[in-house]
Length: 345
Image (tube, rainbow, N blue to C red):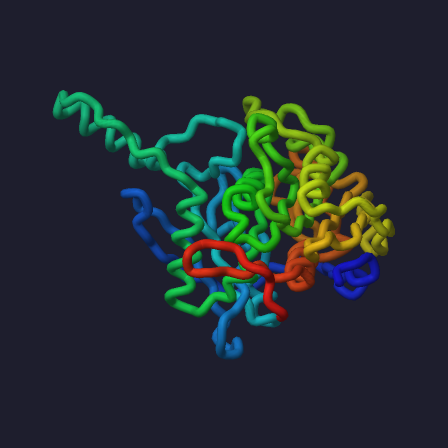
């Protein structure tokens, strides 16, 4: 079980600016057509993994990001080599996800929209209705294709992501509970416009990492406001998001609370809240990084500290995410998309 003491074994000591993702093996790009749109994702399959179905971890980039940079930032490939799971890095249209903030997005990506407008102006023909992409449908297609290439343990498909990618994980938990066994958003609470609609039809395990000094995604909720940019929507608070999962999983007990070892002396400390498992086995864990900003613990900041705040170097956030996933009960899968009682692992 993923508890407070577990992570004490996974501290990452970083030297000379090294990060967990340094020199990681590379994923392969794949393209698929979904809803008439050309979509893509990166796939990493460890060559030394044992035969048989394997867990799949979906890693979603933040707004303005992409799969390749997210692959380097999270460093999941090395963990996949160690544990034998598959990793997919889906690519969002126009470098974002429909995460519930109700932000405008070109229907087929920035380049596709520009070409469409140019063609219509040249032909003087009336505009045809643009396809409305559904990112949840896209994710289902990605999982199906990965399964056709490398057998996937359909009861152990997990989703994580940073910021916008983390917010999108909540849509998967609510709209694809037959597919997703657990989510682990980083700095990604439920978007406020989606909050009332957000309901879990079945319990989904939940782990989140959130800094209480995040200048972009404030822990108390409100406006998402990247430094020097326009407001990027509204979000719920960490506690409001947590309450949704506790209610859906039927967890009422008090959490085990501990402070993880402060190894780096970087101005941050991490408080872990590990709740008792729910009736059907789902788990809820929160890592609250005191003094932490908009980043994944143990990994190099992608932007200056003045813009994103401090990133804890006390432990490896990606390893913590995988260890949480590995501790979760599997979601049983049937070819018709139904959910049945979880089988023993």
